[in-house]
Length: 358
Figure 1 (tube, rainbow, N blue to C red):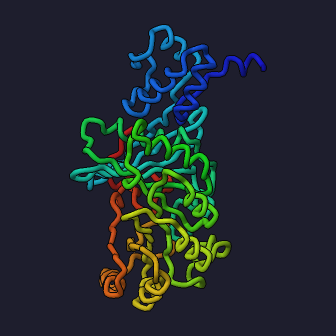
Figure 2: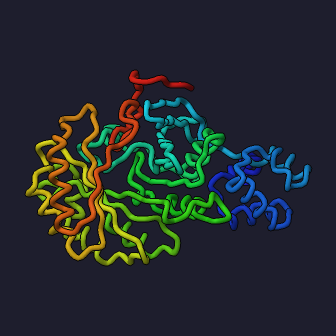
Figure 3: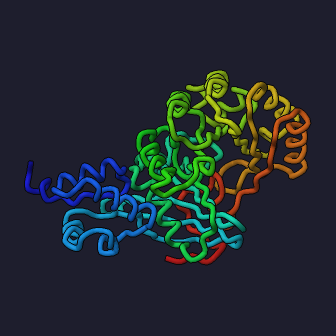
């Protein structure tokens, strides 16, 4: 081992309880110290070794020299008139890359929308994140860190329930191992302690990833970004459909082992004049036949792309068709549009519409 490697500082953020146990034993410490650090870091959100008073002073001093807790750094906060906050966070060695996280407070809960990649390679034609391209996958620590930063920054006003949605930058199922490592910490009752039923992962339709997720013991709810009523239509706005067309995607959905009271969620971004007709609605009903499915209708959010928001009457008619055919359907107007924090708007844009703070 080189002297540089021997003296390398180990980042503990994103490590599991078992990984922390092994690390502490490598320092000649009892393995249970790993569980103590795990609790202090994720459950108690102590990000300074000096504050981990459940550890001996000598160990805290050693950890301050040989380990780190490399949280994402807040570069800027964009605050919406509806209370939503879009965070631009610097990540990685030297904080060389930026990602976005969205914090949405509500009456009895808060929802945190997190990114799983810096940028995105899927190239959905209605999504501004696609214009960034893929910069890189995020590590488990960078994914968990987004939740911890958002919770800590709003500590004084937190509600009893926290939801997380993996719907920020990136395609989660193309960063499967890191995403699942992060989720095991986030959903662990001894970790960040978010209930699995309060977590959702959104995919553009990566069929092998859906099949892998189905085999996971602990997993979030699954959301499918559908956005079209036919292959021809979906090919035009979601190039991934050429690799995993609707037939393969829906077969994977039919084979997905739903737990009691669990539903598949299909997200449908309505593009004015493109996929928002009553005929589209009837085709969606046929696509989802024999699935335990709900649909979220999302009127397209403004951005520098050649699409337009649908007429509200078309949105209501689309919903009416689905409900009358027995498909639970909800209209979801995205929050934070004035600060580019809404679905499909995360492209690291500056916002002049509302105050921002570093």
